[in-house]
Amino acid sequence: MNRPIPTHLKLLAGNPGKRPLNPNEPKPKVHIPPCPSRVTGEGRREWRRRAKLFARLGILTEIDTEAFTLLCEAWGRYCEMEAKVKELGPILKEGEKFKFNPYILLRDRAFHDVRMMLSEFGISPSSRARVSATRTGTATELDDLLD
Image (cartoon, one colour):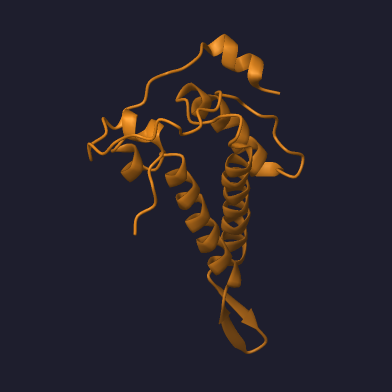
């Protein structure tokens, strides 16, 4: 069974299924929350890169802090694990034995998490193909929202 698609994404896509829209779905205000202190390194840089863009598209709202945090943390983990794979290589040598680099599995899991969260926001290439976004707010208004 497919997950329900949020009304705003259905509207942006032109409601291709022509099913009735939920008139009672919450319509939270576009908002750029401050980056939580636990988000560090590349995750924090990702927050700064994407927050204003997501808000301009109308997909970052006052109730999306946790989901956006998960996306940025997953990106940070992906970057950390990719650096470890590049540093150590795909195969590790322990004495006379060789083993698969476990950071590859961690990197791949983080990659999966990033893809999943991008899809949740309608930002992956395949999910974006179903959406036609419009801008909301001015650059100045959105700049004021950034911490």
